[in-house]
Length: 289
Ligand SMILES: *[C@@H]1O[C@H](CO)[C@@H](O)[C@H](O)[C@H]1NC(C)=O
Ligand SMILES: *[C@@H]1O[C@H](CO)[C@@H](O)[C@H](O)[C@H]1NC(C)=O
Ligand SMILES: *[C@@H]1O[C@H](CO)[C@@H](O)[C@H](O)[C@H]1NC(C)=O
Ligand SMILES: *[C@@H]1O[C@H](CO)[C@@H](O)[C@H](O)[C@H]1NC(C)=O
Ligand SMILES: *[C@@H]1O[C@H](CO)[C@@H](O)[C@H](O)[C@H]1NC(C)=O
Image (cartoon, rainbow, N blue to C red; front, side, top):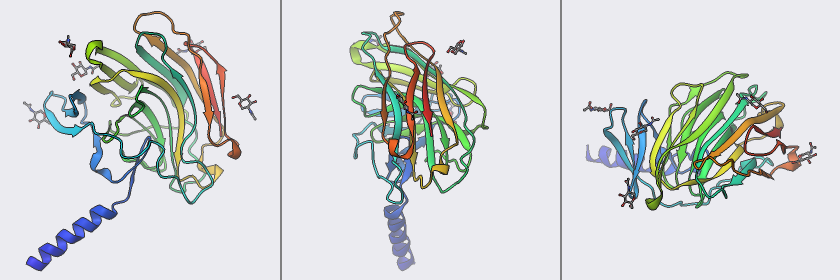
């Protein structure tokens, strides 16, 4: 009995130590311990140095430390591929309007599923980060596996990825050709304590609303293609992704002067990203694979 118990404990420890890394938008995490699904109708509330997960009835179901990042955001690079892992191509804008971002919306179409499935993961999203860039709120379209589930199909969820803990809504499968509208909104704030309340959702996909209160102001907007474990060009969807109707508003109501900046980390593999229409309203960012 005793030997069995010791063996079981050792096996459990080995299993824990060798648990496969788990992917979330932003990179790999050592295991799934710090990845949390928000119950249906629930929400998140930051209180001090902790993030509470609340059930739909408001009761606290879990408390997780905000923590500090253990690794930089661009983490394990794939060794099996010449393709870049992480943020492959993205557009960004830092809020200089002197008033917090009150909403950030983007429409894009779910692409065809990639022609090959080699265990790759592709994320496409709009998102907003605090100035410390140690967290992100984002409605994410994903193909392939992640800490939220998934497989050889497209699916969506809202995520709040913090420096240590990650929170997401339940993954909902979506079909190629569906038009998604990813929106983040400011729903409350206390500027004197840098405590801001936001929602993230795909407005046309029920079950994707993530509601978080009490976090630092989110100041940097991004439109991103992120990918891991890609081994061939056909692991990406064919064609292009057009982030369209990209619209930013700030709380003061003044239309901000938005100019999108670009990064392309994998031009060598034929990726391109361009701003087709610039500005704060109905902008368009085109990614070609
Ligand atoms: C609130 O919801 C949680 C999780 O579903 C449940 O365990 C708890 O009993 C509920 N509390 C009340 C007061 O209804
Ligand atoms: C806003 O934050 C300040 C500083 O922490 C606090 O004194 C004040 O009560 C807060 N206001 C509200 C409405 O919660
Ligand atoms: C977000 O959650 C808070 C409680 O944490 C609640 O007061 C508010 O109504 C929720 N808002 C939305 C849009 O779900
Ligand atoms: C999207 O943007 C186009 C202009 O680029 C505009 O004509 C159209 O009304 C917008 N659609 C929505 C749903 O906002
Ligand atoms: C790639 O995008 C840039 C703008 O970001 C544009 O100037 C260039 O022509 C594009 N290249 C190709 C091959 O489409």
